[in-house]
Image (spheres, rainbow over the protein chains, first blue to last red):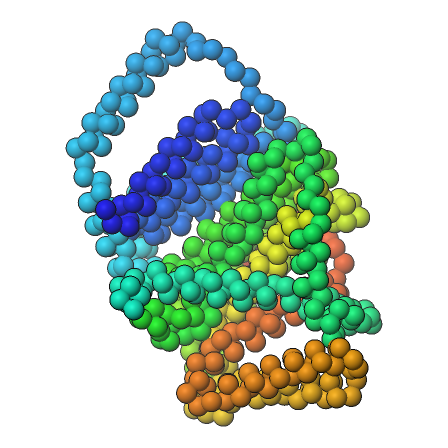
Length: 169
Length: 396
């Protein structure tokens, strides 16, 4: 067991713990905080895989911008403690079997994938030089279509927000 | 010895972190002294004067006072988040400083650079990542106190930090376009030569946007709406007392230090000297500066002070003169150049901050928001587009 692998398991455990806390917590703010914990530990996992840029962007966009807005809205609405209801019929008969099936499938793939080796390999690649030029070339040549499609999606979302904000008068 | 050479990264990093923490904590304490002294001068007062010569022991006394005060937790507060918030604020503010290079990367021990804790090749992005989650400290403090004024302060400050972070990031992209690198050392080395090559000249608009957004981002006057005393008592930290309050206080100063370091690196050449390398007399400047300070302290000790203050000032004098002698030893001389220029430039920015505080009144909240979104954001966007066009034309 080398250092990156140990770190991988620690961060993975923290991410899973955060995800469970997110569902279990009663206060909305505690849920939001757990989600931030998940985001940050995911960022560290990206870092271990050698994806430095993705790791930084993960924190800036998700933890630093989107979750701040979540927390902001929760604070602004002063949302109280959540109410608990028991399982609906839908969740009981369709949701639970599907969830168990998904867990089994994930377990199957985790069993067959050698994650430890991949983390170790990725950590080796992290030392490679990083340039803005290489990143932009990939973004604007190889991945141009997904990039532009995402931009248009975001533009539509902005227009939607504008329309909703203007409708009151 | 075997252990050290086998785990050079670990051992050297831990030592660097310990030294950096010590230096930064001391610097933060004396920043409060500096700020009080300068503001006092601006307002024709003396400032701290009685604890130690020229109030030099005042930060120590303040620290002790904070330690021994009662630590109150409001009964209706959310205990866990209430305790988490100051820790989050301070630890994030201090983590950001780990990415700052205080000197050239070619000074090494066991092949590890001495003047930077983490020499990341996307340092700038990581710095933004860390400062972008810094807002949680303030927001959570406001929410968890379960009290009206802190909540309002926390809301205001989250809104302000989100708004100005956009302009802050956009104003820096111009520099990134010029440097073509996210690494601090890459950005600094591109500005080599003399002060004519600094990024501040081609990016003067970007710099003005940056410094405005940076003052707003650190919640300082004239943008200190989150803690406007006349409206919100003390804003998000109204309910905090004792050392938790001190942690917010230190976090604010650490953030101030970080944005000053960033301004120095991005626009003013970081640890580079403003003079061309052929002027060899500049090597004597750090020693000469300390020597001049020592002479002034000596004059002060001999003529103005009496009693215990005289003794304390004598110690300061000896420290200055000793430092000057060390800086003038020929083998040491090249190594103190980088840190000397870096701290000088950062010090100038800190003085600018304090000067602003002594000079400007506070904005109104709607003025703050319309200024950020309707003026600062378009200007920094226009600067970005213009810079990209010029670079494209020059490269063709």
